[in-house]
Length: 285
Image (cartoon, rainbow, N blue to C red):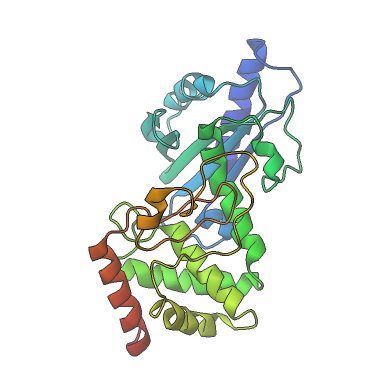
């Protein structure tokens, strides 16, 4: 929380400097949000924090990757600063006072950002470019997962347990072709939906029972995909031929829906399936 509060003060200072440069109205507001494991309250010691800066339409992404980056460079707490503007999801990566931070940027088509901003409102995506939509998807997806589970406390405790198991068995990594944090969260959330009154310990057992027998490549969905009214690219094997070849599709719940396991290969899926089956027969931890 201390690191997040310091970051909020830096963003305030940056926005104030932009105001003085007359690039936006003097009264415009912004939102600094976090998502992922920290937003779900399942983070552990050493976890990174995913944050999102939501700005009004007057603030350009180029400002975020120039003047804000320069402001960060002047801070003694900031180390390993990297601005990756051309990434699929543009991001600023850094270590801030010993805590790893990934910071995204999204500019909404609004004159001002309301204090009670609900990012789940699909109308916020109108007239946005694809990079802003992708940046928003982390927060939107996290909020949808939180909203779709029947028992939040049981979900959190079960997810903490499954994340610990996955890390100890070396299958927690989207980059290496296994499952990342959002994929594990969706699987546990689906288990919660199937067993809405179960305690956390029962959910852990049912998790292994369900997904050791899951008929992949049948997709895991927390809710049926919404109609694609805004014409963004979404996961839909009926339309997109490439979506038919994913080996272990786990679909994010927020529009535009995406497959969160695009790096899974035949070999990593085999290893995941073996570990899930062993999770039933053996002491999983």
